[in-house]
Length: 263
Image (cartoon, rainbow, N blue to C red; front, side, top):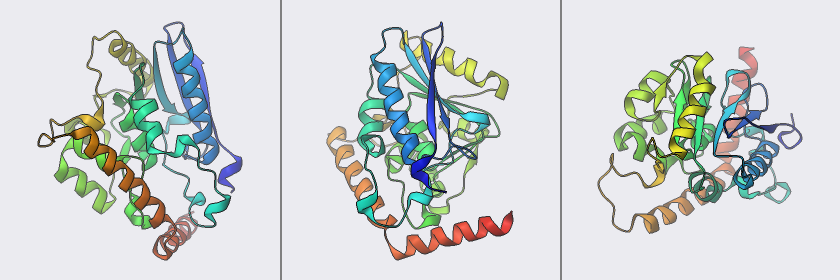
């Protein structure tokens, strides 16, 4: 299926002043180019609106996001759009650096780019059964939207390396114990709790955390902003190069073949 012709996000502003942005791209709400364009547009709209105090991001039908749509990997780079919403700067400057807080309401899956989007938010609320991880290495690539920078700052270097090198996701309960998510709730309470949490952050009743600059799980870094900016650029460039490698293309082919035989 063509990743450029499907998927979107929807935004709904409640009476509480929270804009709920929902990723809609079945079956796993993957981040296709259309979804990323739509996410960028709806997010910018929410930031402009005076009646919006805070933002909650979630996925339709109990799945946050299974990550970047890998049907978009490989092929000619000349034919591929490169929207700002694809860049690490969108997550760092627009989402994380916004003057309005955002909270990720995570259920089902938050994998790859889906988890990277969640980590750019100022808090994450999850269900106990949700799966969170960065499985890019099994496709011969690395996280390209800040995952290698944010995950160690949230859970520590040792566990983050384990998650990335093994490509194994963790469940919501473990993610909460590690500090990757801020609260565990029942699925029926997920959006309600995320909305309340987002408002609490906007009114400074809860901490406004920028995960990219969090250092409590790491040794203090001198000139941390310059170091992070350099590291983000290296990560994004390496991810793009690897996605075009023969190894990555072969692993993507194996992934789809295995999925086809399991149906």
